[in-house]
Image 1 (tube, rainbow over the protein chains, first blue to last red):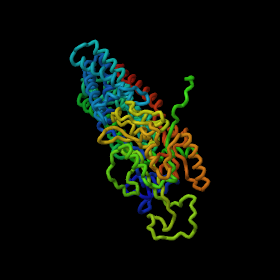
Image 2: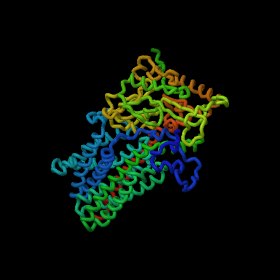
Image 3: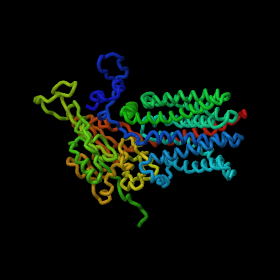
Image 4: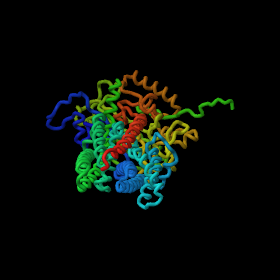
Length: 330
Length: 284
């Protein structure tokens, strides 16, 4: 039999709740919706799950966001005369984007063929768009950091800083369409709000970095970045989870749920400790900065793992599609 | 050379009529043999006669086996069935009706193919036959097509790093041959041909089955207005698609990509403006 409740005793416990089948004592509520069961092929996933490694790809999203938003902070710091903040953020952006590029290439099945990404430019592929963005942004961020740290070619460095600052937001934002432009239920269902979750998370991370590298007197923009970034991320994430239906479930359960809860706690801690108390205490700023960075990383890993979990369980694919067909009268 | 251009090559496809599939797996074997696909080991699922599991990098045809306590549609066996004392399915009364569904699954070669859309290297391309094929000398194993496919077809080969899937035997098509699976199918459950011809034939077959009282029979992937624009490989199923492990209403993910890009552009703008605003006000 193919009805999942008929055969799969190895299914996760939530399966039985979903199918309305009660094993054992027969306690609990009667389902109000008459047929909440769904059929599957021996409980096997409909989708092939992503082959991406969490450390590489979620790490790449985190580092890319950190780099992109840090470049904006660096450019602003340079233009408003905050040398320590500018220097730290430029260096941070270079380290982050290098790490992000390494992770991206490392995750390829054929790393030596990375340059094949440059054969074409395809707007239908966020990965292609991202490759070209990084091709423009990477050298700019690199030139800005090298000029800053060595003192060579200061004028080129200033231009590169502004260029990196203008490209940075795109680098931080494009990863949301990259993830959402898949058939993975939890990634795709959040496609409207995910870009705002990601840029909020990126701003909070960059603010966290700014608070770590700059003295309290220069770190005002970094503190405000953590506060506004955290606010943007948390409200966008809440909105996303409200609107994505069943696909929101993996953001609350399992490893994805744990990471998302950790992300919320760390981001709030970062905002309160760094964004508010960091104005008076260097120690609070450092702790808050670390919390904000960790929170941003947890957000990306949480969304990554939730998506993988949603691809592994056929109910997230079948049920929303079946409901859509039912609603359209088929 | 009169300046008019005839359609040089009509779109071709598979019509897989599962109502005549006998589950022999000749298609799986022929596919493996012709395309020199590595073995997937000797797995034992313990669920049914299907020990292949599903489509992947090394499985381009997959025969599903489904056991159901349902009468065979349209079959009149008379009232005097003999109880052979066969064991009953758990939770079912003895002697009730029983049917097997078998279906050979394959890459759908979608009209709007997500794998093709998201491929950042151009390794995936649309052939002159309307099919979708990976160029293995270009694929760099980024893996983006794997979660993009709404059917779970394409996958990465672990020791190789690149992605692989059905090519509809592109080499054979070029030589005017039908694909290996269709050639090997002993019951013509897998039919290869021009898509328009196959669609007309499928409509006829569906009407025949409905007339015979098999009301659950349905075409899957036949409709050019569905979420993927119809598929080159389409099916006649005897139950809902999800019973066979197929998504009931797949949609190409790139349909929503314009929205995603708009929202991402807005978000990027908000990030730029928002971070710029943090420099306003006090010097601290």
